[in-house]
Amino acid sequence: MNISHNETYLKIEILSNGVVFSDSALRYALQVGAKVQNNIYNRPKGASLLRPQELLIEYGGYETVVSCISPLSSRDPVEIDYQNHRLYVKNRLLIDGVSISFVLEPDYYKRILSTGEKVTKYVSSCGYDELNIIPWKGCAINQTCSFCGVNTVARTANAYDDARSISNDIQLWLNHEGYYISSLKEAISIALQDEVFNHHAHVILISGNLSDELLNVQSEIYSRISSAILPDISNKSSEGLIAVMAPPHDEAHLALLKQSGIKIVVFNLETATLATNQVHTPGKLSIHKDYYHDRLLSAVSYFGKGNVWSNFVLGLDPLNDLLETCDRLLSMGIVPSTNILHMDEGSYVAQLVPTADMIINFSLSFNHLLKQYGYKPYYCSKALRTSLTNEAYENRIVFCD
Image (cartoon, helix red, strand yellow):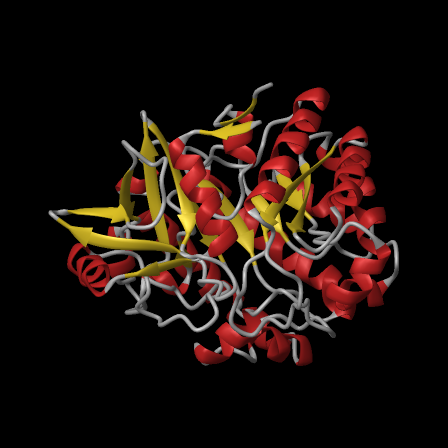
């Protein structure tokens, strides 16, 4: 029998069924300044831009953050209401003692740079304590991933052509790179003073991909950004600078990324087998069947075991296939993780979101692998909004006879 602590039980219920809010809960979110959909990352299918982005759940001193993913009509979504000065769950048992609150908009979201631009043009927060640096919006991959709606979101933000425009004329980026880096450094300086980063920050350089033929150039851009901002983040970043990107074509560019001060590189496979790759990540496959696998293995020799990561979407592959792939990567010093499949605006995935039992069973099995090889989950429970890796690792899900 699997037992989860009350806060983790609620997070699992939201991730497997979605969440809805009463009118009073939405009014309360507006009143307290809840962080709303930032129109940078994927957005829940059908969600208003004013819909809260995340919930902070606390039980017995343990805190975790969950993404407010879209409700699934085929299941029983979690209902959040607000009465008697508190948020509560209307339609679930076993959540006694759980405190629910909205993740609030950080103060730096309101700040303005010396250029007159918003700080959030350059940095933003995902979960509670991630600091995301996104040089451009949108993705120029030649075939989009089935579960990803990033280009739909970017189009809504009038930025759909960012990655494509740069790919068509790289001089567009080079002409403004100096201005961008100067503004980014100021934005980071302001953001890291916010109380959400009092303890630590998970600093992540992330964007959609440039076109396939420019992946070396993308790594060069990342390297120049990294070299410039490293002094600004070194006192707060708990892991050092993390770069989430498509891997470069040439191995020499892995050395360039390392020399720039990037601590961890993340080349996301997303799918575990060739069959699911062909269906869900055709753009990654079109470069070369083994391209991502080969670059992940090469990166270990530059960044070291444990400093090369790759993410999967839990729900696209059969669980056994996914666990076998995770086992193989861990044996090579590559640390995988998973985000649970959720329905986003612009995605075309036809898979069903994993059930609570599937999420729990995978999380426990994956946690066993992590501990067997001596690795820890990514980030912390307040950063990973659609993953249970931290909760499993910290024994918030346990197996009992």
